[in-house]
Length: 291
Image (cartoon, rainbow, N blue to C red):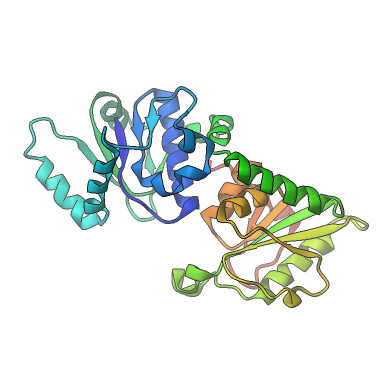
């Protein structure tokens, strides 16, 4: 059995972490518990209902869900290391796994699989990956992480309205907030940067195509900064914005697991702006497959 201990990052990070473990568990048939996803559980079909398509997967680590709070004690890596040292005193010790910075932990390793199927594994981190089986089980992952019906209806209504007057809808993820400090603000772009990239996309689409831009942001936007472009605001619900991006024809934004999930889920070509003055070419948009 495997328990995902650490709450790492926000929605995009936690979706990918859960999805990689789910793909691996589906492939190799071991039990999986993910209490780290609890805060986002009400928004998705499988996690809201507890129905993981017959897989031995659940959210709670313990029979008494309230005991999941004990995991708050080992969120910090140092505390988890203390737990590892203390576990050496146990007669049947669990495997306590951490990932390394900027390095994937391959879930197909024989030692990991033996521990997952024959004992207890506590996984602490977010760079655990099964790139071999992620795409293979892509249809299952999309089914399990479909948003619940109210959010699906909101996304459907939004996109239906846009497509009444647009042939191509380009989703633009404008991430501010924490990006003011993340990576020393490298991806904290102003509206002029996004507008330049949007115009570059529009200029490369076939003449005569009606183009609309769906703006998804975690802060209020000044629409006057996008003069000359047909722009529309998303609903400003973090789940609906994510799945609205997944329903567009193209997705554009800064490096973020949020837009990567939208690309994977909707199989929509994505371009990340790694720098403010990056050239924008339609040929560079690619569907994110996590391979």
